[in-house]
Length: 200
Image (tube, rainbow, N blue to C red; front, top):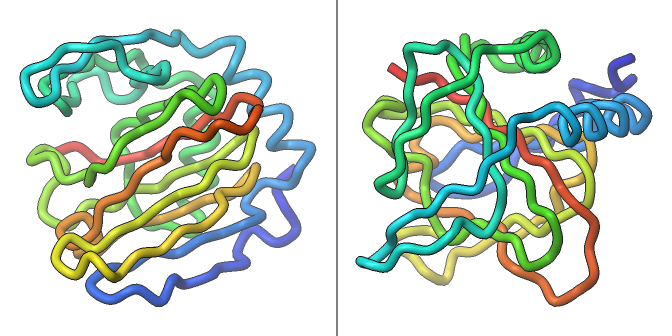
């Protein structure tokens, strides 16, 4: 059952970007069930990435699903997608109720504990097009989502991504802002993040 308030939307008041947040997109019971099924059935992998000439394991597990002709490349790493499965198709269709985008793939991230992270970056790869729409579902432990403006470093924003929430970034957001999920020393349970995107 979907949340009674899936369309409850918060618009972030950030210049040069367009970000909306649905804190209760999935009600707690459905979010719990989605988390367990994704944790147990997703074909998780840990790739090595090269940043500034150094190669190291990604500090999280990942998986790519979607249209099988749509590979995705970031940080000099190319991922070939697994075919859509019924659960991910269902989630994609539910996002379509508030986001008019026919997503071709979803990148899943598993943050196993507070040591797992995703450093500063923008989802601005060429295959995503000029003003990509990124729809991000959060399940499991709450983590802090940081945003920073590329030109005006004083402009920063942070927010808690809640269990069952949906964050949509579109317009010029990826040109002007970068984002991260930072490490935390606090004991924290696993979190799964699904980022739906349209690849040209």
